[in-house]
Image (cartoon, rainbow over all chains, first blue to last red; front, side, top):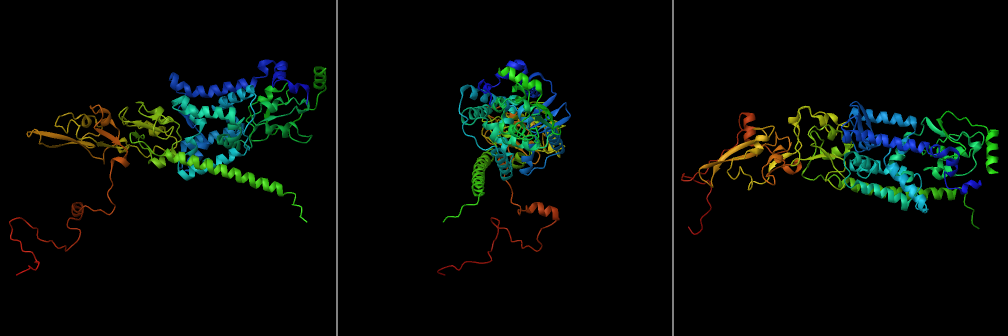
Length: 303
Length: 263
């Protein structure tokens, strides 16, 4: 491990690439989250009805239907076969996320992401212990439980508590006490379990992870030979278990982060001062040879 | 001497233990969720579902709570239930007749907007909608029942003279006036709520209630003799014995007399 491991996370990247360079994907992601929320708010706030509805189901330009496939799946489990409009909408959403990575929903669209990111930022600042860490597979069990409860009660069960759709619907239609649900997620992530909600429990994330198992868009540790073991990528990654197989792989091992848990958030790309990571597609398994120049730069910096 | 355990045993034990723990947690979470979801099925009496809504239990399996029906309602009648603030299952559409009633649009835009069929697309005539049934719940305060001519509920009814009629009867209090009783005919009432919305009293005397509260139900095997007779063009059962009616002052001789004691 290099001596820079003792620098605060991300400082090295800011020094090398500048603040904006070291926060490029983070800024893009916040912009994307704001953009998707703004689309839904244009109608109620300014009377511009380009997009109507919520993340559970929407209609764009009076034409394009989009439906949350998980909500619809629960409906099917509860015993209702939906009309063509909803099915079409769900298929479009499934196809899109199957292509660009299911959990792109989590990091680029989901309104709860800024909440849990804020909780994690504060968690970091306060230096709190990571707390209860249930297995990552807990969310898959919870997904099964949500579908089971739907079948058992004949209702779309997870929507009774889902903080994701609740927050979005609250912002677009009216909040009620849904803010308490959001506050609960924040407090849970801050005090009970680091990365607890998005990283371990949320069945929506688990579902989208399954959707994107074979997705095309992937992060590759192409330049892994340049890695100086500063560990910053592990520190910022919300699903840090996905990095090692790609970054620490031997000669022959793919540099692609192929785990469906990866949310394609791009923070690892931002925070790496030697640009190990890059976005690419799943068939691009190229690995850069350790270039002389990088080694020189590293030894100069170390000196 | 103890046999050394096979090398995979700790793995298997850990796997079983973790699976059991997850399954246990899953069962607890699932049960809690099921309890919550069951709880949400209790719809308050004043909350009415939009036109064409499936029966409540089917509705909750079909409605994805997207709010498109709310957006397409031109009169802002529909609302999405907010968590902890409104009665119906959170995020589902409903309206309160006393606040904004359903204006019964001919093209039923809310039904057209529904992507899942929670609002049944088979509903093509708004007069066939059954959002609830109006009930004149308080005859003691209804102005018409007091002998006045308010008539507002009757006048505003979009299905006037069919869903609500005025039934005339003698006003025994004054002795020389009439009472025009607003009378709901459930077979034609759509439950739009305009009567409740328009009732001039501070608290409406006529209210739209969900059918499960507003209506009784006849047993399946009940037959009304007079209807059957009309349909058959005669008595349903042939050769039925018609006993003589007992009329006052007629010479009535019972067929059987009790033996009189002491004769």
